[in-house]
Amino acid sequence: MTDPTEIIIENGESVPTALPLATERQAKRTRRKLLPKLLRVAGRIPFADDLAAAYYCALDAQTPRKVKFILFAALGYFVLPIDAIPDVLAGLGYTDDATVLATALGIVGTHIQDHHRLAARRLLGLPDKASAKA
Image (cartoon, rainbow, N blue to C red; front, side):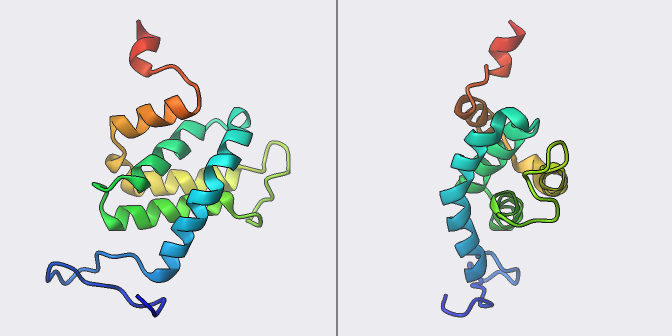
């Protein structure tokens, strides 16, 4: 893809299945910046495990491209240094990030599988839910 608006249609489908080039750039930026920021602020945000699970789902080869697009957009918003409510504001800084993530999960949350959640909990050093119940 050379044009940012170009979308490749694969398998003869009439629905675009590849991400536009601009979104591929966003995915690369997210991969590079998300984990350091997430690990830095994980103790201060209650949605850290959902954020990490969304990240693992977006990286999964089995996740449909449309779902990846939505997840990378939400994850990208989290790593943006400038957003609607600056992250440095105590108590309010991450509410816009949580809203964007909640909206994305409301749209594509069914694609986040148990293995994505397990990987997220391990990344954050949280106990597995199965072992926490025991």
